[in-house]
Length: 424
Image (cartoon, rainbow, N blue to C red; front, side):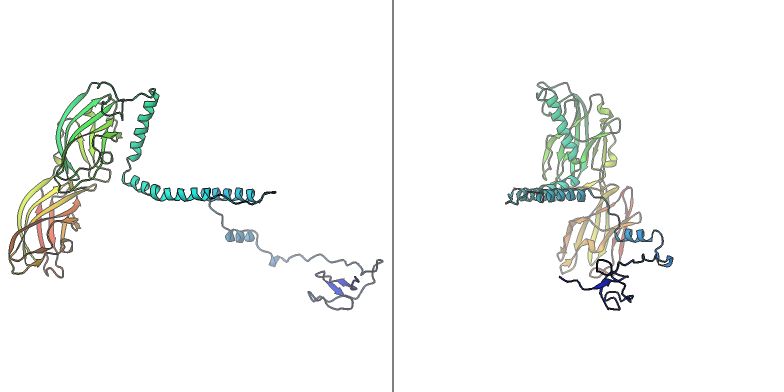
């Protein structure tokens, strides 16, 4: 193939045919044709070096680096991302290694992945929420694991004693109310172990209780969740076992016991029983047998104060301050205030008593709260007397002066009615 005579452009190096005055690529004017070289081609060209960039066109020091950092901000290290990246790299190297031949893959890996997702959804997520609601479950598992380890270290023999070791008993016979259930601490026993419980073998405190549920509702609680013992060194231990750990139905009376792993060197009289979680109003019971628990008892005052509102005649009969109501313990720093009413309707038509949350408030210490529950009916029949019910409020503790407010609200009354009372 013949070569077209010409020469390269002195500026961009593009081949320019002979006789053409300007470069077809950059437009540079071509100089007069020099004599060809001894090999018949165009004479060699000596291209001048590119002129240096003038100072005014140069970027300030560090500016280019700054721009690059802005374009690509540093990435935060992520263990998950690094693990996924490593797995992806291993997969790439395995699949594209020399001599690799693709083959039909088994569905076993996909099946395992689907199974893991199902287990996460149906076991992991509910387990997480159960742990949040029952934070002591980890302690229970640890106690059981420790007990199992003790059994193994003892040669695999059962830790339950064949004969009952000696027992020390301190009678308590004091009653408190938790979540609406009357709990009598009958006695506290101490031994190295109990024949009917192998959860602890190096010292056990057994708290014997009687539970009576006359709250009107079934109560669901677990001693493992709301009970603890405070030891002489101010540390706390959760129960290791209970005779009946579940809730108690309404109208049921039962005997029960709760065991704690406590060294025998700690004396019963040095221990304190706590009923209630850290988020609840806790009942503190020193196990001396003669502790003053009056602060934890409900207090009731009789008022019989008349109130006329919405054409109905109310009588505020009694007010009770309590640490609990049916199936609920008051929040930490709070108390339940339970108002008992009698309502008469002297009118010839049935009146709508409505929802108490619409028109009734209780104020104490500058705090005004709405009711949390009520048993008052929505309607009061015409020409009837003696309709009864309660309205319950959750109020800050350590108050004695209260104001019951019937609001001036549309659909009930145009006049607000305030009633003051005290709980001593």
